[in-house]
Length: 384
Ligand SMILES: Cc1ncc(COP(=O)(O)O)c(C=O)c1O
Figure (cartoon, rainbow, N blue to C red):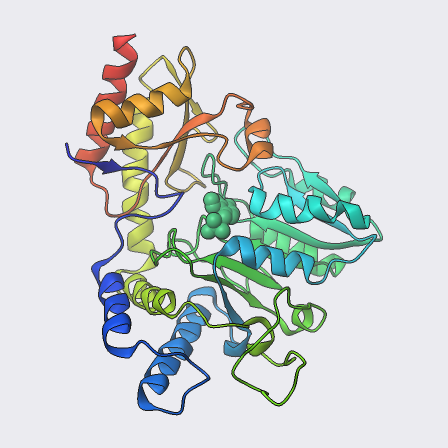
């Protein structure tokens, strides 16, 4: 088989063709900046920019278009959201499954006296909901949480976490990197104050475009990390305080926005639930077959309920890095091994520091490809 890409949790591939067409059209036929030129192509670019904010509002069930902010990825978004309002002496709650895009901005604030607590999860990554309220202190400001684990695919119960935030008047910031585009990430239902997103994973856009949606109540106490030209209020040397200009300084990634625009339309056309259904069908087949191979430990949830199409395997009597390398070298299968920028998640799952081999499917994969992956894994473990 030619190259089989099973690393969609890192970045999705392939992208829908209209994504490439839209970027090509921007580069070839439009090419200009927004908010800076009074000519027709600038208006075309501005329309697409505005439409992309609308598409994101629809996707995340959010109603304030000007509070949809573009950044270069979810890492930048989470940095802005966390560092923009957390103050010296504040306390934050996270889950034990967080990616370093959440953990590193938080731990870097420890020099300001900011502390954090982790809500424990069990070894299937089920969140210990009963522990959350015990962790809330008088100085707790926010809960920051991923919607699904990038290591083992478990979906976290954010609706319940959102209710707890509401009850205790905490800000709720959601990392949607592993769910947006195939599961509802609902601003209203989750009682969110911010949803951070990245364009290049399950949203199927290009790399280099991401963003966040922010409530008015969080926005009014959040300061931008980057300030500069916005094409607006040019007579002033101070940053505009209105949205979206407050957080969008410097020339934007317009090829990225055009690509993301097409990706969001593609998701609308195919439908979130069809994408999810297809991914689960593939994941179910993979898990069922893998469970028959005794040399492998399936990490996290043992079935299809409450999970995404991300599957981590521990090849117990082998080196996981070597397995990932051999899958690529001998079978043209691309996976990701190691700790996946989520050391705490691996500690929770019992796979630290060994790491796992992660297989992550997209709806573009086929059952034949799943069978090929399983056969290749079988060949590998029998070879040793
Ligand atoms: C759960 C989660 N959060 C954040 C990120 C960071 O994404 P990006 O590199 O697009 O900023 C990732 C990507 O690996 C992720 O899986």
